[in-house]
Image (cartoon, rainbow, N blue to C red; front, side):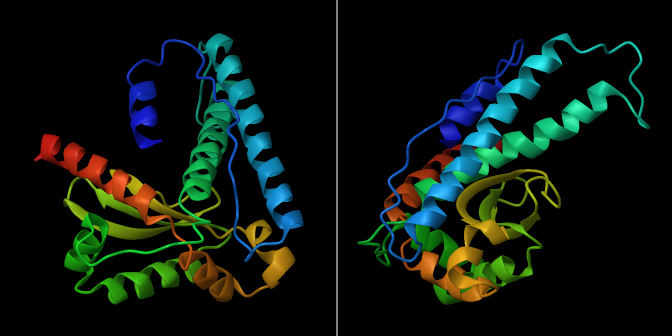
Length: 217
């Protein structure tokens, strides 16, 4: 997923088209109704993202300003919906592993333990980000400027996103992700999802980010 994003970012001369992907959400921590609703929301972000991208190809840029212009509105919507697509795909890919397991010699375990002191400290900090986000996301990502893995919280899809973060672990903490099954208990929901993180997917992401880090040092 991250490799695909990097490839797309190299050429933006025409509309960027996102394709709806299929995900097998096997977890029993979420009801089927919740899963179905979540997938439909994801599809809506894909469709909106494609529509906005197409409009940006032909929008009038001659009278752009910071107070109000169609270009400005489209760019704001682009960030919101494009991030909505990417974050949902990363989230769906890294949850719902019924055989979730991480060994102490895994790259992911070593890196997160090193940057947070202990693996448990990373978990506690990540869970705190899940609780602190105001309807949005908790993300563990590589900060390409510090070379460290950092937990961040994103409000909505595009607020409070630090520059230079490459996501490797993503948790959806919008209320629609859990309210049907957990009401306001975001901590209970997040803890349940963390029990089924797909560490095989996360391991591959971290291996890729380490390659990227080696190019920026």
